[in-house]
Image (cartoon, rainbow, N blue to C red; front, side, top):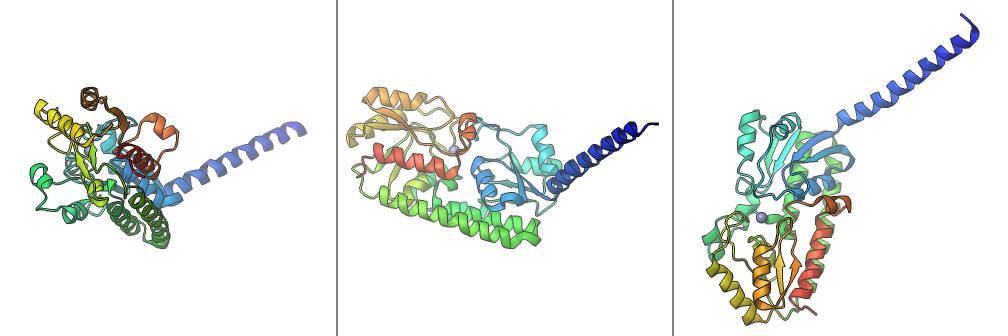
Length: 310
Ligand SMILES: [Zn+2]
């Protein structure tokens, strides 16, 4: 065996060692991260904000998929079983979550229904809309309730990974201050508007948001989900409201063909603007790096136009 082959062999050995070191190390880092599966986009974004580099977060909803009609695949179930933590909003919004948990036998404490207390506390039982429609799961659209969700997520991460609880606490505080700043600015923007009624052709999702800013949200959909088509009578009622208020804008929701909103717009000569419910994002929005706050800011910009705010 010559000198050069010894050198080549050593070099190969060196490369193999380097690969083992690099990939082995990466693997070790990945394994140390807390793995979290979240059902909908706001939970995903909030967990990324609070968990930072310490967590590996997966969003169960594929890009562009409408949240209310979603049902999980066997692959989703395996992901939940393997995860350190599974976060969902509410049995109202994700009625399948309980089924997953039972099916995969996730142990207690690994699953958190983030909105459980928040939804019940936020429900005004004297409210006419609430009596009609039941509990409203769209809590993330009210920034003050989003703050509460972030707190619940921070606590859940600290319980799963107590060694890093100080980091989760710091990250929560930082993100909460951003949410509070957005809330304050939104209050100012929507303070002086000629119109106070958000006419949406989409499903009823902005009740909590409207209440927070002293506005009224109307939708022809009966419940809190876009599955059942609204009645012609309900659509006619919205047309009447648009004509009465002199609104020039009909809001439509994300990820769904705005058929109903278009009927109302055609009937009243209004134009369509997006009011993003932030249940999920499209592939394009994901690629653009949109997050909860960026989408909510666009909503406020569109509301400012639609409600003719100063
Ligand atoms: Zn919804």
